[in-house]
Amino acid sequence: MIVVAGEALIDLVPQLPSSGDAPGPQHPALAALTPRLGGGPYNTAVALGRLGSPVAFCSRVSRDAFGEALLGGLREAGVDVAPVQRGDEPTTLAVASIGADGSAGYSFYVEGTADRLFTTPPTLPEGTRAVSFGTCSLVLEPGATAYEELMRSAAASGVFTALDPNIRAGLIPDADAYRARFTSWLPSTSLLKLSEEDAQWLGGTPQEWLAAGPSAVVMTRGGAGLTVYTRGGGTHSVPGEHVDVVDTIGAGDTVNAALLHGLSSLGALSPAGLGRVDGDGWGRLLRFAARAAALTCSRAGAEPPYSTEIGAL
Image (cartoon, rainbow, N blue to C red; front, top):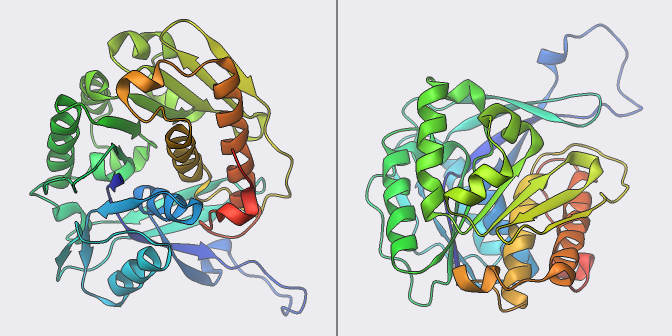
């Protein structure tokens, strides 16, 4: 069982104009917005379920209509929602803006929302082999402290932990304090995955992060592909897969899921097992993750692929 811990929210994504739309001046901010189920951890959980991994989601979800839709999406993907807490507060909203290259930016509406009020970490389901953390849930209090506590306790008990900081700078009031907190998580992290943009904002290097705790650091480089840095000094890269990009929403989350699913398939989903993955294994893992991310980028919103679409590791 892989547990994904963190927020579930609604992405409001600009609707792509169709050829039949009437012409006329309109500011991009006034474009029609389509609600999409989302949140980095949520997307990771759905992607794992679609790939066929046993997965559970640990979060706090609103009882409003958006919250019900989020739970419905998890169940449809085969995700166990037993660890999900519920609240009467509204669902967090993320308004997306899509650049000419398909890259996404976000404005968040998070005050008084249900997911950030996650305060009491549950007991992990029996048979939990890995827990994945990241994104807004590690920024917004009081939930951030509770998720941090769960991360440290899972690592201390020998459970594999994955971390994707997925930086949303607009939500971080004190950048230096967050960077220090990020560094404090590394001794409790088995696998660190982040983007080139995350790395630039954090200001560190893969070698520095490896020395602090993780057995491997996977860096995504957009269309240029992925690179893994391992504690033994090995570095392995694969190119990105060409695709007509609609948007990049959920691409990094799909990489998270593909890596966890692939490591499980290789029998390496443990802190010790990760260190035994050789160059050939990493090549297969990274190509699998690149293929999954490309499929996600080929459609609007966070729509990770099913196992039947992506093929075997």
